[in-house]
Image 1 (tube, helix red, strand yellow):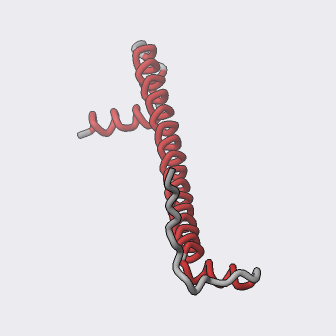
Image 2 (tube, rainbow, N blue to C red):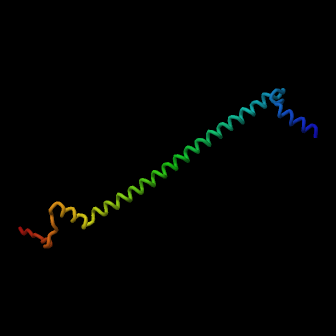
Image 3 (cartoon, rainbow, N blue to C red):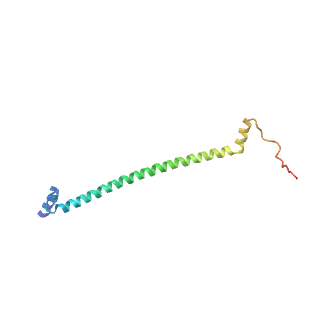
Length: 106
């Protein structure tokens, strides 16, 4: 038990960094630090991408609703009743007589 306690104290004091096997330990620590930095950078990159995707989805929904509203306005404008109202405002009236075919015979 005393040996385990001494090893824990040695690790907490950092003796493993100044022993004769220190270069091996330093290489491992530097490798782990680089891996940690890569992991942190990767998670930040993923967060940015998730936020961009959410923003693009919101913009897509807004554009879709604008498209639907514009299409319904266009359908209302194309209705015969709205066309006749606009023509009446300009002084044109709907004909009472139906159109007739004109046949040209040579």
